[in-house]
Image 1: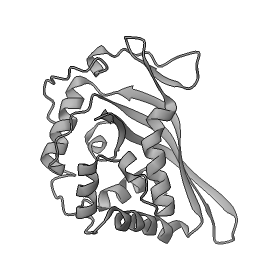
Image 2: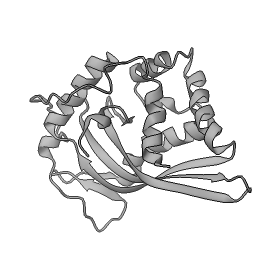
Image 3: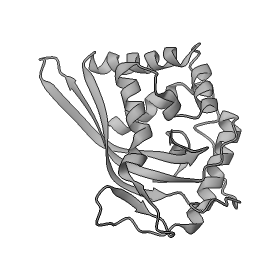
Length: 212
């Protein structure tokens, strides 16, 4: 099983009614991002003596691996428990509202339960999910502008990230097989972590338009 494709499939189930999502084309435009950590001020500085650092910006500030993993770890926890408590640390409120409505659910709790049920049907009740950081690449100014345009056109929300990263991670699901033995399936996962309105958030939608 290709777990990366499966995870993206689960994420996209909620958007079945959005017929233009999978066929949308990338339309890069010039961006007016002005935050000092926008991609125009970034350089390829991903190595550091401190192994906890994922990336160093031109101004010397850094972002840690844990910061880039935080939103997807919350998402993994929601999918493996059905607990919606930390959904506001995965998606902005307006994006979460869109996901809930697209899934034809009344509340984020109902939506979290739906995600859990989808995975439980495959892996049973006793499973855990995790992502291990491998590397990251900052979104360019054009990609940030296209990201905003994508969400405006397809999700009908206005989001202009200060910056964002395509994160490559090792995604694993540990579960009990039919013999009761603990089994782990792993695959490479790609997602975007973006900084918007003072918070790091997760994207599994726009990233599907990128040629990775």
